[in-house]
Amino acid sequence: MKVRLLLFCLPLLFTGCSWVVLRSPLGMMGAGSYPYVECYTINSDLHTAIRAAVSLKVENPNYEVPQDSSSTGTLADGDLSYWYRMYFYDPEEKTIYMAGLKEEDKPNTSTFALILVCPYDHEQNRFGEMERINMDFRLKRNMHYLKRFKKLFVETIREKAVDSGRPLQ
Image (cartoon, rainbow, N blue to C red):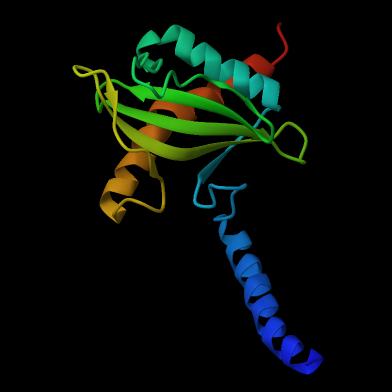
């Protein structure tokens, strides 16, 4: 009986371990429910990166997610234990991006990750279906969202985080 159990469990264990080992170097590993996030490195500590992201939204109020009057309530930025969750609105594309910030073990390094993308119908004040980046889209559409997110939000937050981390002269 023990031999059968061992013969059954050993391949499962091996398959699971090899899956993690092969995926981790590719940068496809995420936390919890979002294993397909697209990660970007921010060269600052978590608090500076959060301040940079909040500053971006304050300077560009059109990047704030419109308030929804439906039963889903509002999409508010906030701490979610391991990730600091943030929402950004792209008014040109009428798209909401759910992103997360987390601190890394390496000093002055944070990860900024794109997690979900959601269309927003401003006229009807309705959210569309949340879709996972690197999972739910065809390649061309996925690349479009990644480029757009990086251009609008990642590059600006990187610049702001680095600038706010410099000592005043």
